[in-house]
Image 1 (cartoon, rainbow, N blue to C red):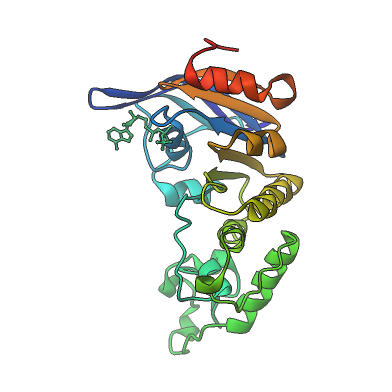
Image 2: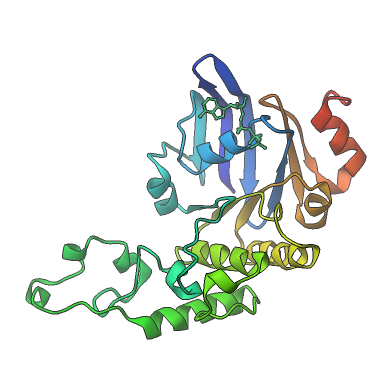
Length: 265
Ligand SMILES: Nc1ncnc2c1ncn2[C@@H]1O[C@H](COP(=O)(O)OP(=O)(O)OP(=O)(O)O)[C@@H](O)[C@H]1O
């Protein structure tokens, strides 16, 4: 079954129409590339899926059930994670501290689900006098497991400030894995990193797919889309002009679809 279905999604910002009548489905374990020129509507579409924006029209279904997403936290609780282009990492903290930022494991919150509860809900009544201490060992251990799953050499105790672009991506991706999402949205993960690191990041995306996640990858880099995606969506001026298997397309066709030299495919 499709993990995500969008039907007839449109989005207006006042007089500007950013998206018109977008429909798509995402299956578990597939990587879908979302391409289009600047202003084509890619970010708007991804932010609707991530709960940042409400669509003006249309329906969202998760596992066949119609849903309304009330903000990013709600989307996360429903299994949708997003890795923003700027990654939103705290440079002066370790990899592990970034992964657990805002949901730190403690002596009273031993799992991520518990750590996401407000402090007073983590305690049984007889525990109200207990001090709550951060459990660094547990966070380092879990972070090491997440990096091992992603086959990344990033170390939990390393400072993000000293990391390469590829390692930073690994930290941001490992952070999404904490909540065990079904859908991971990635905004231009290979835009600002070296060629060698691009390979590393594409491998991370393959790992997510192998673990059964559906991944949406916004990218300007057509070679990356062809390297890692199963399917591609092309947006032009807010309309979907192609939704096809990568194996049935070519970089030339995609460039034509983006610029408008090819009407649709
Ligand atoms: N908050 C906003 N208010 C008004 N207009 C907006 C807003 N966000 C985006 N737009 C407009 O909606 C359209 C689609 O923008 P969007 O950022 O989704 O495109 P994009 O394909 O992600 O482009 P880029 O690659 O430049 O990020 C553009 O015309 C943009 O100017």
